Image 1: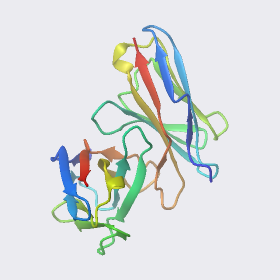
Image 2: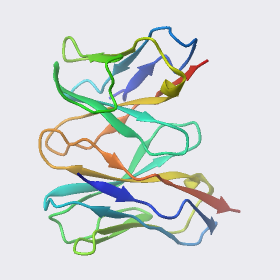
Image 3: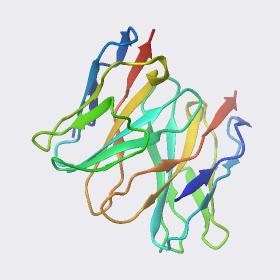
Length: 115
Length: 113
């Protein structure tokens, strides 16, 4: 079975600064996907960024980038130039490749952005 | 692409009543997932459909829960004889190979009194 651990329940960042959210996972599989999802208060879960395990290059999406360390089973999210709209709960998630790519989520981290 | 929709958005019911939720996936997506999310936790997988076939059910899905996707399009999740412990947000997501990224609906928040 796969597990995802987000050990920081809360983090805070000053607007325009950079923040890194941590995530570790455990699996015996070699082929899988990793995701960061954002869930604003009382709003829909949206995909922030996705990483395929076979790719060595770290994924980036505008201000969002990841540091994927496959050997260490670590998958952190870096948010640059933080904005007030980045305030939300962030979930790290894991999925195997193949037919049932169900997501296994961490407990999430609440990010607040100080103006 | 109108996104994943769920209905109702909120449901309050009394213990022992039956409730049914509906999910409409993104139209070209053949995979549909149900998750349950309790306050302050990450979503937990409940069940998965590929087209109309229900291919996996979690241990979390007790006998009181049933899900269907009769024509491979929308899906329903029914909870019979609701209990207070069923209070949660029920999320639906859909995806399509090969990339398989799941897109979530807004969820149905259930409160069992």
